[in-house]
Length: 80
Image 1 (cartoon, helix red, strand yellow):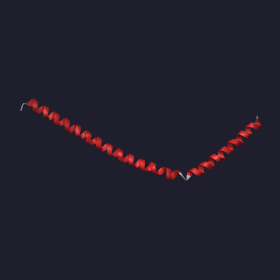
Image 2: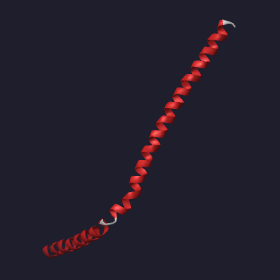
Image 3: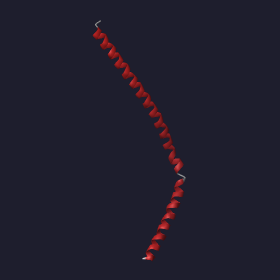
Image 4: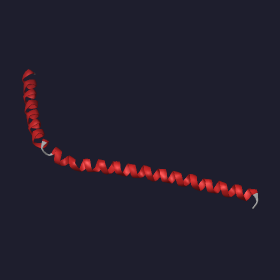
């Protein structure tokens, strides 16, 4: 074989090896991201059950705030 052919084959082989390593690195990164996303999704799926008890408390707070707002508006109206 001529030296040019050998150098070309070695260069092509190195290019294939480098591309293979990059693809393997990308696959590992995607697996890691996928596992992280699964963890996040499982955590988000549990949120409604954890937040549901707070709904009654928030309704109570909103009622109290509405009463406070009405009282303050009444005071402001009397002051004018």
